[in-house]
Image (cartoon, rainbow, N blue to C red; front, side, top):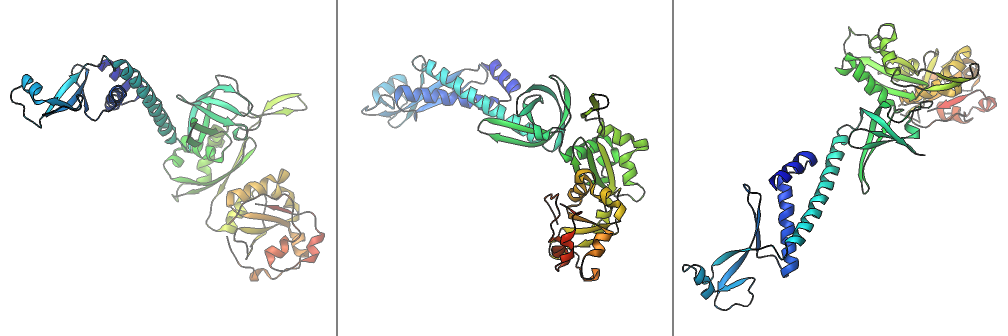
Length: 404
C-alpha cells in the first residue's frame, strides 16, 4: 500500500495525504451505505504498515437501543472492569462486509483526484508559460487546427495564428507563442500562434542580450506575418544604439529572427514554390507622437503631421507628391503597419492634395492622442472631421487613404 502511494505521489503528483484522505472517505462512505450512518465510525491509517483500520465508538448505557452506537454496562464490564456508564469504547470493525464497496469507491475517488490533480498541474504549468515561446512537435492536423505536442498537452494552432505560406509535416519541431491558456469543462486548452506580433518581441528577447537585460526595450510591434513587421525600440543607455543593437552586425540579429519562420510563395517564372523572408523594419521610438509617426512611416518622407482636435488618436499626415505611394505602401501595408505600431489612425494626403483643401490655419488645430480599425477607403468627410470645417473641394479627390 505504501509503495502504491509513493508511485501515485511521484508519477501523478498526488500528495500521499490526499490519497489517504480519499481512502478514509471511501471507507466511511461504504460504512454509511452498509449501516445507514457513519458518525460513529473512525478511520485510522498506520503509517508503518500502510493498513487502514475502521473503528466504531459505542457509549456505555444501561439499556441498549442501537447496538451500532451503544453497549450495555454488563458487556462493557466484561471487556474491562474499569468501564462506567457514559464511557466511550472503540471497537475495530472487520471490513469484510463493506470492504469491497469501499475499495471500489476508493479507486473511483482516487482516479477522480488524479484527473483533477493532473488537470490542475497541466493548467498551472502552461499558465506560467502564457505570453512565452515554447518548442513543440507537430502531431496532427484537422480542418481547424495544427495540434502541437508541448510535452503534456496538445496545443492548438489555428489557421489565423499560422504564418501564411508556412506548411508543416507530422513530427516537425517548431516554436510557438503561447497566448492563451484556458481551463474549461472539457479540460485544459492551450492556444498558440506563430503569427502573433508578440512572438517577434519574445524571439528578440531570446536572441539579443541587450533586449533580454532591458538595455534596449521593444516598445511596440506591428506585424503582417510572413511579409513585413515594424518594431519600435528605445535605448535606456545613451551609449547603446537601439536600432543598431536590434539589427546586429550585417543584419545578423534580424536574420536569427526571420530564420525561425519558413513561409513560401509561388514564383510564376520558376513555376514553383520558393522560400521568402519576412522583412523586419526597426524604427526608433520617441515620446513625441508626431516624430514617432514620422519614424513609423519610413522609408517614406513626411512633410507634416496634423492632429485632430476632436479625435485624440487620429492624425493627418502630409507627404511629398512623389512619396504618396511609398507612404501608403503596397495594398496600404506601410501606413497600416505604422498605424498599429503608433496607435494612431493615420490619414495620408499628398502635399498638392493638402494645399487644395480649404482649411483652417495649421496653428489653430489642436494636438491630441489614441486609435484602432483599418479603413482602406478615404471618407470625403474626413477633412471636415480632422480640420474642423467643411471642405467641399476635397470631395472631388479620390487618391486618399485612411488607415488606423
